[in-house]
Length: 103
Figure 1 (cartoon, rainbow, N blue to C red):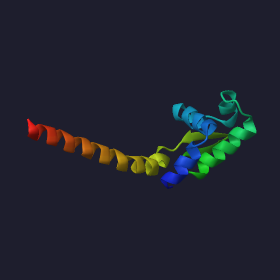
Figure 2 (figure 1 turned 90 degrees about the vertical axis):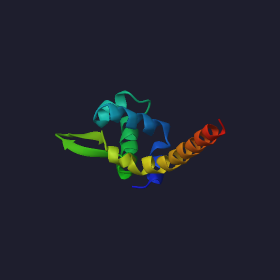
Figure 3 (figure 1 turned 90 degrees about the horizontal axis):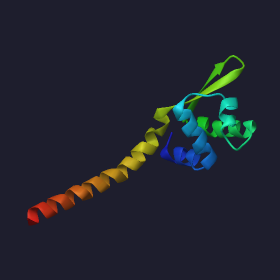
């Protein structure tokens, strides 16, 4: 998915908290809802958005579904941010070279 999907998915504070909780350990909707200020159905809706953005995977486990982070779902966002980081590092390197040549 593109970086836009990741930005949109993580744009909601509750969804970010759910994603961060999943980063720690895979969980069911019930387990995730215990640590949130929203209902179980709301957590399910947030997970659907994260799943559509390819940021989480879901595995049926008995009568439950286990959700887990898909780290590769962040690849597009990481690449997008790295473009800017590369510019910053390049500018820093140029400044260091400029100052080194002066002295």
